[in-house]
Length: 134
Image 1: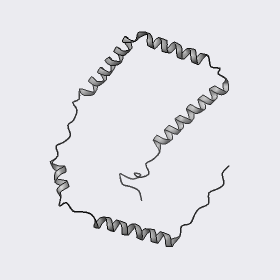
Image 2: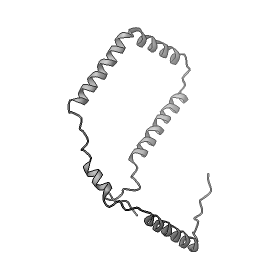
Image 3: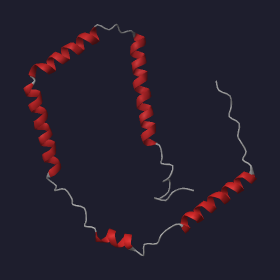
């Protein structure tokens, strides 16, 4: 087991110094800003709207990929069966015990739980209604 983590108290003098240094840096950055008198806003307003893809494009793409996959599978008819036979031969020659099955089920469960935890975690910056939390 690991030892309990001790809470480290910060030094108020260091906190004040750091706060002052960050504020000075921000002020320096603001002073270095070059005002473009609205040039950037005018350029962005003058840009044309992005072109939208036609509605028929996505179904046609799916159909073309399906045709390409079918053509590849039809041009190599023996490859799929040969590959399946070799995979079965390799897998069938491996000894499998109950411990191996349990380890595989545990690994799949851990991967599933980890993936779900990663996907379902709340964003640290957007807990409110679109505003960063303080």
